[in-house]
Length: 285
Picture 1 (cartoon, helix red, strand yellow):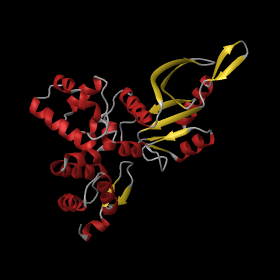
Picture 2: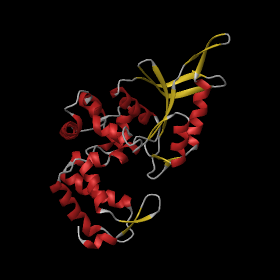
Picture 3: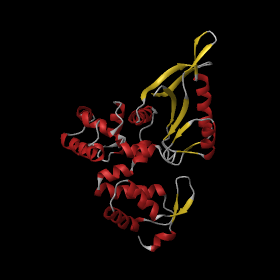
């Protein structure tokens, strides 16, 4: 990109202003699987469309539009964060998405389980068990970019965890039911949320937290892309598939009939499956 962009001021999703960073955009494209030649092409086509005060969201849209014409698979990976946000409006698809991530780590999971606590009855988003350890996992889904999970979230989840932590098995006799409470979100945590969660021995997983083992790390490492990332499906088709309790791209490989029920024409169906295979078709479903 030319030097004119070196001082270009952009507006972030938080409303803050910053100098446009070609390096950050390049790194984002590289993480999406774009090779140097593709990155150069995107930057060359993007530069003339930029202007002072442009939002980072608009830059993303422009870059995504260019990528979509050049490489659908790369565009799908580039839209991962946005794709996860499209798992709403209800929280269930995100809960299923998180459970699928946990399964790749060897956890046995159950979703939406009602548990009697010491004081009240609770619905637990996910119960995950591995090697004799049981985790209570609560999912905090956001559908707005820039929204953070503040300290009130882990404080609230921790209070619920303490109410269900132990199970009464006989009069005055209790056994440990849950060993640790988790909070998983698709955005970021505030600093205070991280401090509180760490202090209370909770496990926090966010978009890019912790440094190793974040949400995006697991998705990219195991190619657990949500179907909402796909560029060959319309928003209505994605919502219909979510209603059928399908969440992952790889689930579509063995659900051709559901795709047809979503209204896809046979020739369009092949385009969808081609994109899915380019993303994760070589992995076992």
